[in-house]
Length: 105
Image (spheres, rainbow, N blue to C red):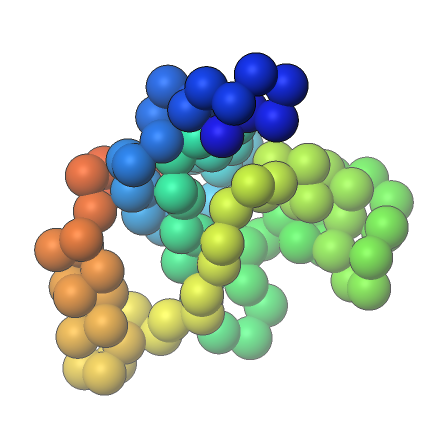
């Protein structure tokens, strides 16, 4: 809900899985989240998204200001997509999603 007028945001009820990193994908998903989509960012274990330690000075722990800005309004989960267990969880999440955003080569 938009706090200023109690109208639902345009993408309320839409679920997005974000398995992108760096700029284009996270920016796209940031816009979707700003419009009310339920965005779940999936990050690899260990370092997470490559931009956690890049894109400007650190604001919170080891996360950069750029990372925090581009991933606002998102939930996140760490999944190792190279393991059977990680893939199983990922495919279960895909079943619940309306949109999947990725930027793998």
